[in-house]
Length: 99
Image (cartoon, rainbow, N blue to C red; front, side, top):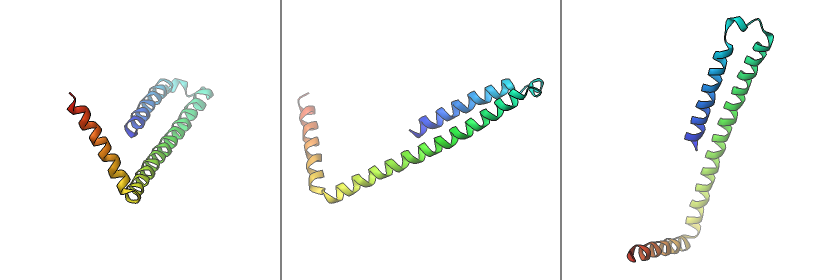
């Protein structure tokens, strides 16, 4: 997921850089709307960066919580987990043996 977030953020930043390049002309500095547009772009990018970081941290927290829950279950129910692993292994062996 992080790779996807990073590539999406990189593409968005490239798009914004291209847009800023288009409106960066010194001839446009006299147009007040251009200054406002530049500020809105900068503010929007800042918001997107913050949202991306928050989403990445939340995903990492959820993955950690899931791993801890799985670890607790494996420690609390080792025989059940071993039985499930045995059943899956037997099923895979049966399927592969029929080929």
